[in-house]
Image (cartoon, rainbow, N blue to C red; front, side, top):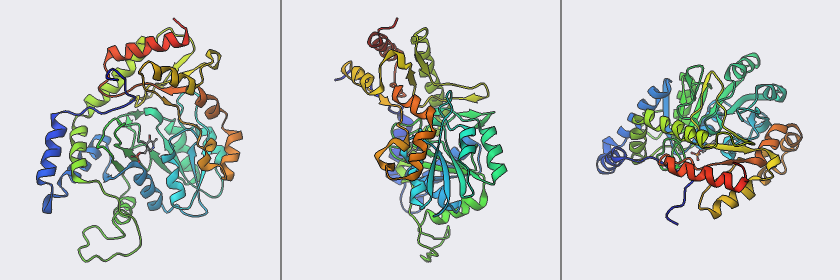
Length: 376
Ligand SMILES: *Cc1c(COP(=O)(O)O)cnc(C)c1O
C-alpha cells in the first residue's frame, strides 16, 4: 500500500549519495581509511569526546566496551530490564551475568535506586540505556558508580543528540556505543560507533577490534585472540554526511514529537515520552503508554493500526520475560522485582517516527488513534 506510514526510516540527501559515490569510486588502496577517519573525527567532535571508533554495529561496540573494561566470567553487569536485547546480549558474550534493574516511571530509563539495590560484590559495571532518546538521572548514577568503583557503559544507540545537564549522550558514561542501523537517528545502513575520553580503554579497544594487533602493526603479529569489528568505507561516507547534518536531523526528531504532542493534546489516558528539566530528549521513537483503563494492550492496538495502514512497534518487553532468558536465575529475580517495567511494557507502543514523516501523516496517526480508542 503506497500510503502506508512506516515506523522508521532515514533522511538521505544528495550529500549522502555524493559521499557514498566518492567512497565507492575512490575509497580503496591507501585511501580506504579516509571516510572512516573523517566520520570518527566529526562524530567525536559532535558528541564532545576524545575518541570515536567506527564499527559494524552498536552491539559490537558494547561487546568491545565490556571486553576492554575487563568484564568477564564471574562478573555482574547491571542493565535495565526494559530495553532491546542488544543492550544485554554482549554481557553474555564476555561470559558475565546480566542483572536486570527496573526503570523509572517517567523517563522509562534505568532507575538509580533500583541500580543501587542490584549491586553485589561481583558487580563490575552499570550498562545504562538512553531509551527512545530519553535520559536517566546520570548525576545519581555517577554517584553510585563512584561510590562502588563501577564503570558506566552507556548504550546511546537511540539517543544521538540527547543531553543531560548540557552534556551529550555518549559523553555521560565512561564509554558509550551508538547505532547507525537503518531505523536510528543517523544511519549508515548498519553501523555503530564507540566513544570514550579514556585513553587506556581506547587503546585496548583498538587492539581488541582488530584481532589483537597493535594499531599500525604491519607484520601480522597478533598478540591475543580477539575480534574483528570495522565499518566499511561506503557506510562511513554516509555516516559523515549524516553527522554533518546533525542539527537538522535532531531538530527534525524533536519537531515530529511536537507534532504528535499537539495532535494528541487533551487525549485522556495517553502518556508520551518524558523530558526532565535538565535534559534534552531527541525522541528516537515517539512512544505512547496507554492507561490500562482504556483496555488496549499493545498487541491489539498494533493490529488495529496495521489495518489502517499505520506501522507501529511494541514497547520493549522486559528482557527477563523473554524466552531468551528463561533459564537465567537473574531473570526469575527480576520478574518479581521490576514492577515498573512490567507495568509499562504491556501498554506501550512506538508510533511512526521516520525522519521523512510529514505533519499530515502525524495528524492521520493521531486521528486514527483517537478513533480506535474512542476518545476525542
Ligand atoms: C538499535 C539498538 C541497539 C543495537 O544496535 P545495532 O547497531 O543493531 O547493534 C542497541 N541498543 C539499543 C537500545 C538499540 O535501540
